[in-house]
Length: 424
Image 1 (cartoon, rainbow, N blue to C red):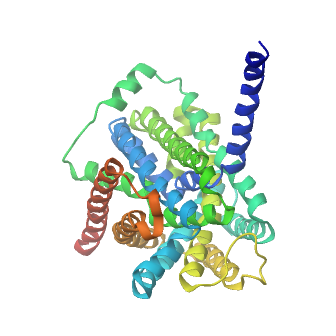
Image 2: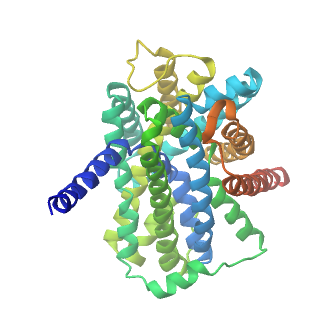
Image 3: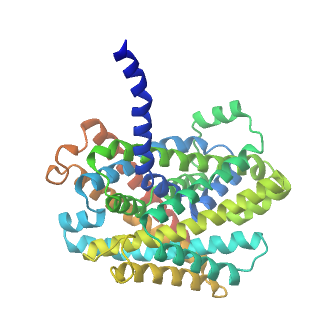
């Protein structure tokens, strides 16, 4: 009798203890995945829904599983080795591959950070604020929060920013969707050989899994000091983050399909999508969409320069980390500062070639991703590095298949981006 009471009384305590550990561990996985829905990602998903309706919703199912696989491997490497991805690449493959990645990574993230400030400018213009006010204010805000904070405080800020993506879900729910119809559209693959459709498929895949995500995730896990015994919680942090980000992507595509596509309107940017929603979906839905773009742009403008700073410092053997002060890790914070400053200043230049900057970013990221995925797979299967925590046969089959498919699609993304430009 007493034993039975004891077991019944202990079960909630065990559950609460596990919940407490999970809440203490979560952060890197959810934050990294959500930042992937940045200004460029939101633009891609908006155009996908606005130009192709519901026909691309099915694509988010395999993409989510691919994201699970890639992010989980990086998280596992961070926990087992206690080293960032750049550290491991430098040690395993030498300086030359690290330098090639380093140069490409800096240029790509510099371009993408500029695009994030363009997202800030576009979203604030919807609210009637000039970019000459919003962009400098955003740059100062982002710099201050990161440089004057620490890992714990910033993680809380970034988790709050992650939660704001719910605005896209609410915006979609306000349209009162037909769930039966949506389910049928989601589970029924729609294929087309039309060039615009194929380009959008490649674009969605390319914007979902990017090189910077893997470096940032592993670096933040290492800095957080997560132990192997706690890894099961980190794994769920990664899985939950991947699921959330693609649910948000789903609602962005659906919202634009149900309104803009149905209205026969063409858009080119996420700002166009938000403005088009005012007469089609109602004022509140449009405001939520615009506010989501602002949050996503500010969020990514913080994380992308950080991921670059982590990679450069790890690759060069310099001190890095959000728990260090400016004087303790000058290279880390100086690089972060320079990226923020360049991105913000460039947007303020009249007639700045923003489209060329965004295209260059896509091309470089697309070129780097196959190499990064190959490095990850070699590292994760190296017993000298991972011990007994290497991939199993089934996971390797899934991981290699994902890598090959992602590599083919990203090469196609590069080719389909460059050749129209050369032809023009």
